[in-house]
Image (cartoon, rainbow over all chains, first blue to last red; front, side, top):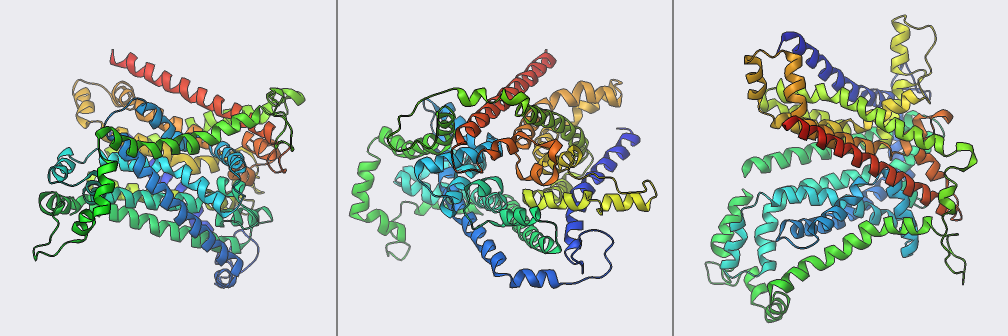
Length: 261
Length: 332
């Protein structure tokens, strides 16, 4: 590789990093601006916008509403996703390809179409727009991500583990709970965090399946439609920090678990 | 750690009913329970029954929950009216599909704009992220690659709306880009970036770049460096090595990255609403418009969503076939 192309590539790489981080950094900075007017230059600084957010019971309520949705939908996705992964990595059966295609379908449907389809189906099932409908839509949408992650891990488990357990007299249920499940732990933790983030950050499904109580992204969206304000920066920054911390923690812990294996 | 624990268990105590002191363990108590044994005897009597128990619920789930919403959308798109009033017979019609081409191209415009946006943005994302992935996979020491990848992942954990807002601040008339341009003396007055195709594009690339970067990185990372080195020894220049070796061998990653980015980018609703203007209306906004009302326009919205879904699938399918053909052609 010539020196020129190396220099070119490293410039592109770091320019890309700047492109990714500068908008978020500016958004964070703007949340400390002592003026209602969004834009540069920033003459004086304040923490008032953050204090305002912590005193705003609407925002706090919305935050916990989103969190509850994320936790509940993740629980469903992880159970169904793992179950599907076990089915799809087990012995071959007629129609396995079709089941795989159906499993992955919710991840491939473009966002708006997925939201519309869920909205129509919720009405068909008699689920009113609101928390239950959002939890259900997030759960179904996130299943494929769990299945893919767990399938990848499951395919690396030596067959002899389960066989040994069976030879020692364990029934399939005990074998799964005491041998397979512990082996899948890193994958399940990683997939859970991914689902939590997907659900917490989701806009389009929450928007179309929600009732008057918004989730955090829907709240930010509706506030943005009536104009930018440093208050939105403060809310967004808090959401950003929380998701980043959770993501980094999951990434590090799954890497540590993989190393220990 | 976990593996050793699992191994230890498979070796000694998975089926053991007692701990070393002779007291029954938790699992010993469970598996020794008569009701549990009876249940296991019934559930796992034959391999066939075992399979049924494993497969039944997931099969019902994927058919009713994964496929069900799509089928019901198709069904509603063919209904004369929805919801049906009491006692009304469901009557099927293609009327709502016909509306797609009606009204002097009112709906065709955003439709083709969305597809064009999707294709152009996918290509732009590929051009931007390929060198990034290449640098990461080839010029960074292996032990640092994961840390840098983690660095690139951080912004992508943030949600669509928060990142869209960040782009709004960047590109606004008092945004950082305009401020920098004015400070450098390149422009007199701020350039109106916002509410144009440009702002929507910057936003969508910002949102989808990762879905391109990851498949490209994993394809490049798998590719042995020795291939390029061998070609270099045989006298191939940088460009030739890239065109004849690296590019053909990463076609698969390019294919999956492009398919993902295309399907994801045409589905965004919030970002084009916030970053776009009247001249950049995308089809997602058209579809959403039919659902803001209580229900009488749902069949039209559903029909449009079906059209968009099958068009997107067809385009992704043709593209995947194209990539497969290119790969075959190269291996010959």
